[in-house]
Length: 332
Ligand SMILES: Cc1cc2nc3c(=O)[nH]c(=O)nc-3n(C[C@H](O)[C@H](O)[C@H](O)COP(=O)(O)OP(=O)(O)OC[C@H]3O[C@@H](n4cnc5c(N)ncnc54)[C@H](O)[C@@H]3O)c2cc1C
Image 1 (cartoon, rainbow, N blue to C red):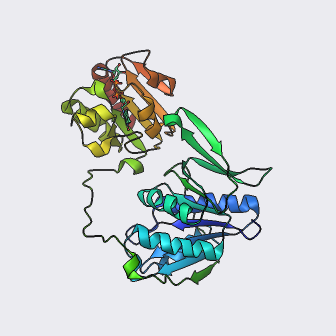
Image 2 (cartoon, helix red, strand yellow; image 1 turned 45 degrees about the horizontal axis):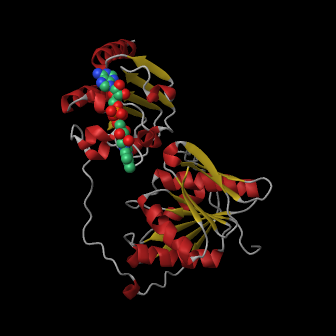
């Protein structure tokens, strides 16, 4: 293992920019690098991406490896796995961290297999074991019922981290770093898939993952009209509307509003859960919220075990009073 050294992050690039998850991963990598007393490097893969290398350095990287090739313009598993394998084999980082995004989820298992190592996906925290100096990979298990810590002594130690569980670091424009170009050396015939068309998801208002306030409804809301009332509250709070699975299945609200293990994973400052029971599958998607307010007519509803504040009552009566009070407070 002696030859593996340093921390590496993969900087995902979306529409020629570093999305928040890439910055969060850089912040996490910086902390691990400092704890180990080692360097942090990052990898930027794409076409015309070199200009982002300095930004990655300002966010904590000591070195930025840039692999720039027109064949890498769009994410394709074959090309990105080949390139990442090449970079990792050349640099030999002790730890490699990526975001738990659709790219991370797709890339990591195949990359780990090709590098003959293990990977832990969907971590909510990463740390260094003080005794073994191994990477501790902390993640929810059993549908969010428990949190487990894994370590593994195969190298590089690979993990993905969930969106929004860490804060992006403040950029430091004065930070100096090295930018190193690596030739992709891709043979186009080895890229078996081609991107034919990109269809942008229709999403009204604030994206759930970006919302700092989410007003979420469950089966207890009962109809699409009911969700209009939730929409009003969300608009007052400049937040977004979410839902449990039954309202999406019933088309009271668009399926892309589903929060949970098979929906979106969110971590807003405030999650208002109305008429939803708090199933484990739902809480897996919103359990990281900083504050949860629950409104439910059943005092035994499991959501109250997770809520910071709870109101027992019929939402149709509670919500108008809640909105009136809010208007009053906002006009002060
Ligand atoms: C593989 C799998 C994946 C799944 N993935 C997800 C997922 O990603 N997200 C998800 O949400 N679910 C998911 N589910 C479904 C999950 O198991 C639950 O069935 C679902 O979360 C329940 O939704 P709910 O809380 O809205 O409904 P219910 O459990 O039926 O709860 C409705 C609540 O509304 C309250 N209520 C009713 N009327 C009122 C009223 N007038 N005022 C106030 N309160 C009222 C009731 O007291 C009750 O607590 C998944 C299930 C499986 C098997």
